Image (tube, rainbow, N blue to C red; front, side, top):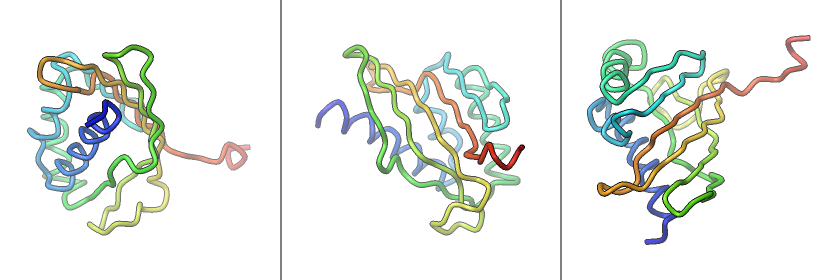
Length: 135
């Protein structure tokens, strides 16, 4: 597998964990000291907080929601042990495949190569919006 394929496989496993509602599996794909920034700007520092917050989401308001895999993601390697991925995203609240209106996102990931393989160390989720609508 190429580095690009390995990185995208991590993001596919991330989607699989979300779609299964498995907070532990979801968080396991992050470094211990990862930073996770939600679409509304909340920062979740560290794997433990990423897991506990997602457990609450998967058991509550996002129960049964689904996300897609990395799709047509942009992947670049500024160093051989660092990958930056920019991907479209969003969640379907009814468990289907279609992203719910208003939940479309652009997601940026920074992954680092470790002894355990590629892990996510930075995550930023930004809602897609039309800046003209705010004017």
